[in-house]
Length: 332
Image 1 (cartoon, rainbow, N blue to C red):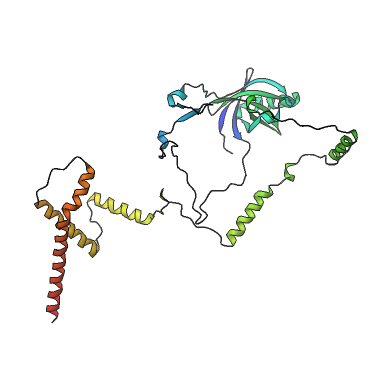
Image 2: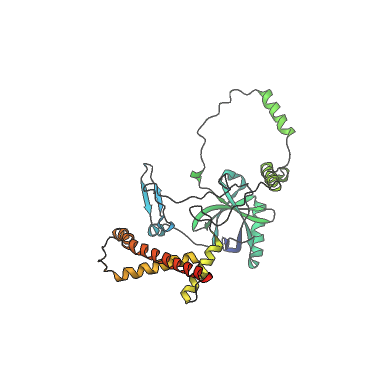
């Protein structure tokens, strides 16, 4: 276990240095949303509901929506003015009878482990809580927000349980009409309760759903029903060719250092020669001043270089024809 918080429990003039550990963890079965066709994971984009554009994380702010649907945007300066605390103290406010606190108020549970210097006062607090059959109501700052919690003893360990605020517990908005209950019916119900009476043992209960899911997955794996999906993809869903990307990176690095670039194929070399001849033809022509509009310049450029490219292509074809004739004449 890894401590998630360090501080001290203070009651009166006594201070107990402690570490805080999460006491629970979820073992619930979780599924991922995937594409049924190929098993690829479904991704979500942060899109603005007004303009439909994707929003960068750096451009996202916190907003508070009012009851009439208006949005109040809060920036970092606004949030900095809110009350926050970084206190490392678990302050005991009072000790109350254990049966006065509704379990519905309990939220998260944490174990308190004493530091070596606080072992004795920790044991004293634990024993006092047990003998008095009371809980310690405390205030503690977790994640820069003050919350109410209780300290109680579980086995030999003091447990801190955070609590919800009273207005977070909902009241039922319905009434139960029971009608008249007869004495004989109540007697029979009590007999049923006594028949099923016993001590609670959590080990008697199992999560049959999780076990069934694990068995189903194991059966599919053994039957070869597994989708091998790539872990690295582009935003459009196109699979990234890692080897090709690495090769391009190596070539770029060599070019930057002035080293020889990889030898091109014959077709690539012919295209390069044609482009070179085209550039030479363009250098000899008088250039017109470029307009400010980049789109207009882009449209004129292909029309301007087209004749030069055709001449270069003819020139290259003539060279190849001459070479073939010379080879044939030499062979005869």
